[in-house]
Length: 193
Figure (tube, rainbow, N blue to C red):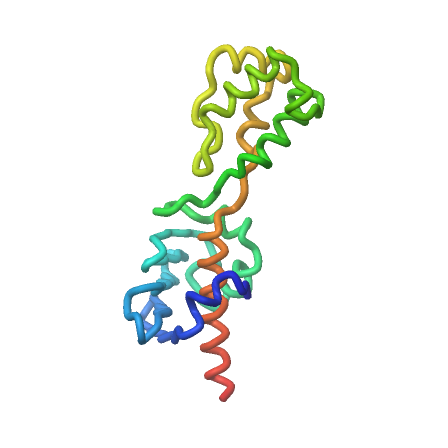
């Protein structure tokens, strides 16, 4: 479990509700009621998971192991990449973009691994123009025609590099998985006692 999220969940309890084809894990702090609460709704019939609560909403589907609360723990809590592949909708961004990391990648791929300080005037123009439309939620939101032309001269498939430059899994994905791991292990510990 990640210590990064411990402050959110250190007073949480979990209630498991079993219905016909549905299992609900309600993970919350009795002290806060709604703040920092998460509800995991597993649908066995449709092999889906809905997460709702204070941290946003998410829907994930997989053909055989998403609707079972125990299989989810085994198959997904330690594999955020696999989990992201199964997400169909999320109210929060699943990825964020690190500008400094993106700059390193762009310098490496398109500017012969030079440092920014070593770029000539023209290269600096293209570099600065490219990052004019970069943000941490979407990466490169817009590429001007002049920059597009420059990049395509370097690599005809430049857009593949731009898509992944600085891209990282958002902390919200780790938070959902960490909270689930805590809730699941709390239930299993209660069963042993």
